[in-house]
Length: 117
Image (tube, rainbow, N blue to C red; front, top):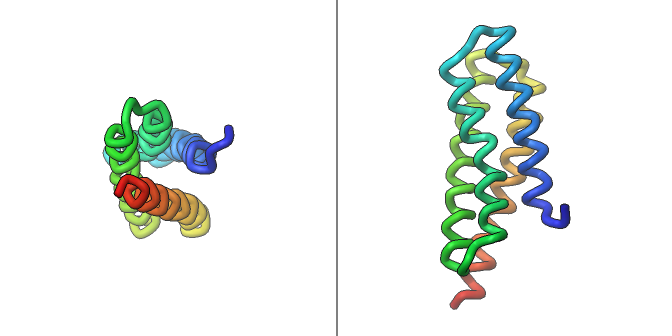
């Protein structure tokens, strides 16, 4: 994989899948786990789709969806930490990965929009 965003979002998605399994099996949690698996795996899916966009508008649209999903994942991770479903250290590690992806997405969107002008 050449793209940092695709690589980082795929790794985060794999961590989210393991988190989902932990929440369902160990914590018997079904509501938040469904929310975070959806948003956490959607980040990379939409970023990957953006790469194959048919136009710059399509590319921007998919990256913006990816950014929204990233923000939602950030929320769920914070909630899981605060509600003590996951250990603070583990949760903050995932949160830091999520925030790094968010920064890359914001920078990428800014660059693409600036180049469009």
